[in-house]
Length: 167
Ligand SMILES: [Zn+2]
Image (cartoon, rainbow, N blue to C red; front, side, top):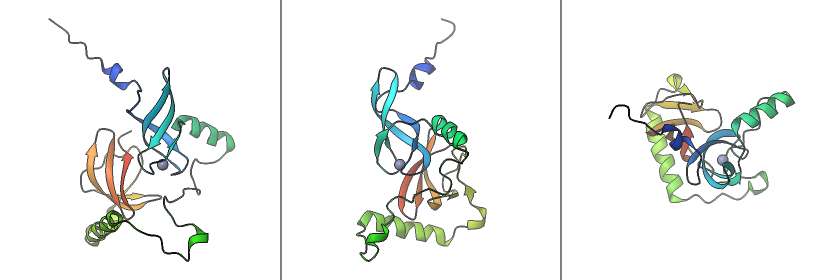
């Protein structure tokens, strides 16, 4: 036997349960999503790994093209921080889970010794190392907790988030 045929393309095909880069209107970013529903070869519904929201699939290319047509940057100036308390509920202190509090405590401990001036600005193209400090436009400073294929898990002040990397 000479030549081994690696069916690399097969694994790249979208399928329910697989990851896909998609635009999340709620987060205001191109983020890692899980495919929830497909019609034939078309992805129709996805779930955001960052905010957990399920919505219609919108490719990042599609959104960028629409934004260019409208003459504005996608997400610029309209990025909503997830789980920000609504202005009307400002008087009420939002209940935080023990998980969120623990994540913040760990974040604060790690940030105490972090060199913020040397943080890498987050973009989907960065390839961060484990423990690297990243500066995200909406989430602030985050520390790389886990690196995976095409994504990484970051610890932000608001908790853990999986974001796209190396794209
Ligand atoms: Zn989202």
